[in-house]
Image 1 (cartoon, rainbow, N blue to C red):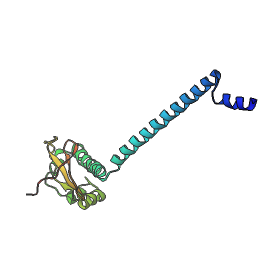
Image 2: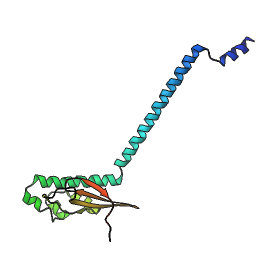
Image 3: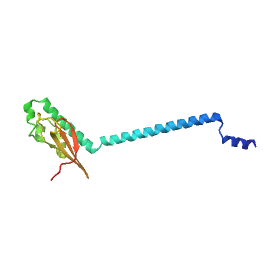
Image 4: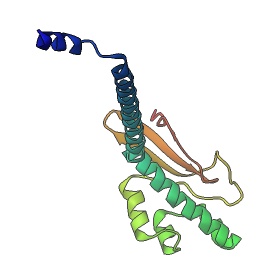
Length: 159
């Protein structure tokens, strides 16, 4: 009979054990919240790294670096040397040591056009590099302006 009574009492915890059960639940809840927060942070980090490793972002970054190199060349050299940048080709920029042969090959391979650089017209509406980015049905235009900004927009109409 005492064995049956002991089993019956074990179903109902005594008040001293209720505090321990409450603490266990609080600790479990706290660990659950920490796990969910960690998961959310990991997902946000993953989403950010996808953007940084996307082909569009990579090409825009490369165009910005090449554009910055052209702009820096114009600011570091005399006016007579930089005036000649307005009508030059990519090969001329390599011959003038503005661009490396690797950068010129990148521009040619990706169909990026050098539109010229005028030292007197530095603004966000004076493009120096222009590229069409096409990946399947995804089309964007990447433009580097003479003030160093790079913008993506819809491609020009071909009509």
